[in-house]
Image (cartoon, rainbow, N blue to C red; front, side, top):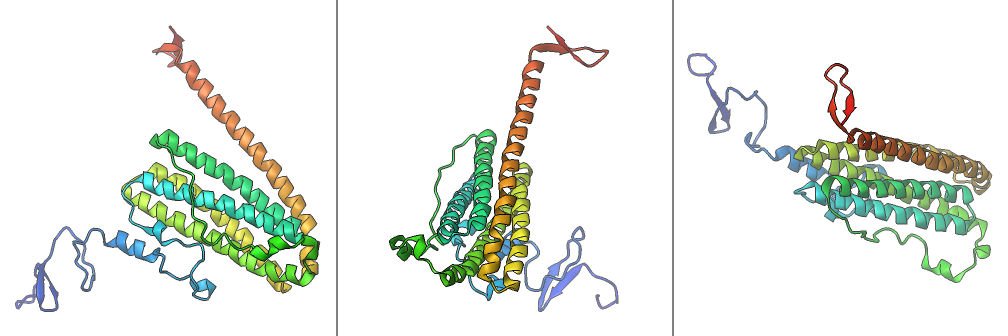
Length: 295
């Protein structure tokens, strides 16, 4: 207010007087300039920097987090190159988890990662096709090996017959913690990439990444339920061995369904392409019915 008790057209910030823009809603910004257009984007980036710690994991940094992935991106091509590299690393991750559980004789857990290996291989292939079809570029198959060395090198000197039951139990919990960290990092990285695409106005690309995030979120939900079951019995080896056959049956059905869905999807795509190729044979539409008339 001014000396006459009326509202004036200024904002007082300490000793400074800033002219108020009548078209801008009043907001409490403290010492942050209101004209800083990139504030939201930079704040969001700071949240997802590699320096951020995961509070749910005793404030320890996620072993799969790579700071280079959380950089400012200039176009969608760069973002999808990062996503493909992460998906490639994910396929390697599940492949090595299969080796780990097969060596330990835990075939239900091995089958679980086999399903994820096949599912994410398809997703990776689909993403690369999306990049070629919509961006007209090729992406290199490259990824770092950070966090993938979880199988002890000493195991290569032993037969799996030499592994005692207590060693099997010893590696179950850490392997599941590593699996959870991988999926959490995947969800966090994809969320960051989706935010960058939204900021660029690439909404079709944004929707493509959001579908991946939904898949990861479902996988995390299922994983956490399984970990709660195992934790409730303190990862008892007898309980773990008893559940392997059930998991094998469950994931065999999922793998079969995965390929059925893939065949159905390809059939729909072929039908869609055939429809458009037939429409190209027609020269004009009927003014009365709106149907194509063969020329």
